[in-house]
Length: 322
Image (cartoon, rainbow, N blue to C red; front, side, top):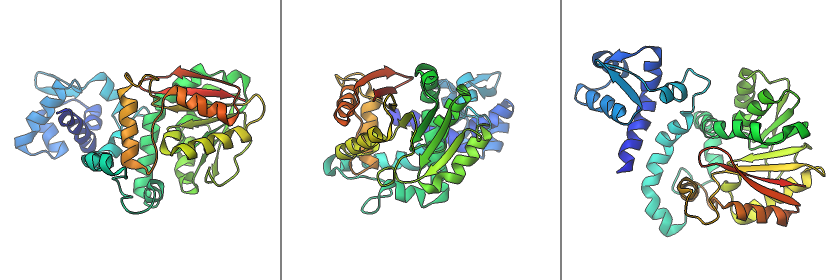
């Protein structure tokens, strides 16, 4: 019954519960009016959020828990609810067809019987913005971890391949003033990327480069980052992309691949395994992988040294040095 709690949280984000309470704590009648809740449902809904430790309640007044106030208030730069918004609007319904996906091996999303997922998402401006915001939310923690743990002092330039809104380039540039970077993504992403980078105050050192990373040449930089990108593709495409990255890097350059990397014994990282099932739902051939798998692909591409480092939550990065 885990989906009960999931959908309660997703609906709370959709209704703006946490953003409303970030403005001021409120009692039941006030919240019911502000959120447009029916009288029958309001008390149980809000008290369920209390029981789930997402809200606090004292003397009949509701307020955000500390973590929901930080991460789920849309007005804060730390807002990570974009991925929950996308999960609510898209993935929650698509996962209802998991059994069909397991039997057929076919995607169960907007592309069912049609185009690939990115063509479908990028053709709709609202869906595109929602997707890009979701990618920022899912990458924020790992971006900070990569900024702190990779030896950036040894490098001057970087590129985030499949940069989405620009969370990783912005975070790296803010943390390391000596770095200049590129966000590489399909051309439709450019206005959203530039808007986000300008808000983060690093537009003088981070630029957008539009293109298709399978078809177009890659700019020359010291380090190439791929976050939540490699798992989108089938094995042949994964290897082709790593080979193209190897060819683009200078001697001494590095690639940083991060995903919800599955533990080599495939027993512990449940999120990584579930994410791989999500790739079944979302893509024609994508899947998540173990650290040993990615290191082998990197060595096949030509990288001389590789290692796996844990980041935050379910994410790890696999690093290859040329």
